[in-house]
Amino acid sequence: MNERILRAEPYVLAPGQRVSDDWDFQPEMRMLASGNQTGNALTVADCSYDAALFGPPLHIHENDDEAMFVLEGVVTLQIGEERHELLPGSFAWMPRGVPHCFANLSGEPIRVFGLSAPSGFEHMLTAIGEAMTGEDDPIRAYRLGEEIGRRFGFRVIGPPLWEMPVHGTVVGP
Image (cartoon, rainbow, N blue to C red; front, side):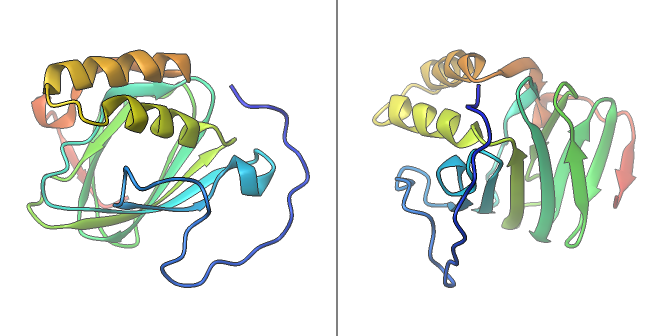
């Protein structure tokens, strides 16, 4: 859970630069703002994923709201019972408590601008990254991620998107 929101100092990042938090374990994620920079108000990341992103399982965030803006490629997003194919320029808002998951099912790279408010999501990603360093067993890695996620209010409630049947796809926002 987050500390209270504090006053933050202004800052600017140059192209390719990211905040000083240690994100070497997840090079596809360019962290633009974390709680350290925003006074715990939000987390912002520019995420580039290759064609093999399976994405997280169906889950809810108990402590934060999440937003996604697609910059490149096609992201398949499930919110509740609806599946969406998000094209570049599409935006999705996923309030806390709403089941969702996403994946790259297109076979092409994707790039997404992600936001989480309040901040704290980055701490979960750091803990998972540290725990999984050197972990070769995918089942153990999945269980570690699920266990750590629960501590941060990330609750898995179903399978990943690529294992779900398609009930109806909504194209675009």
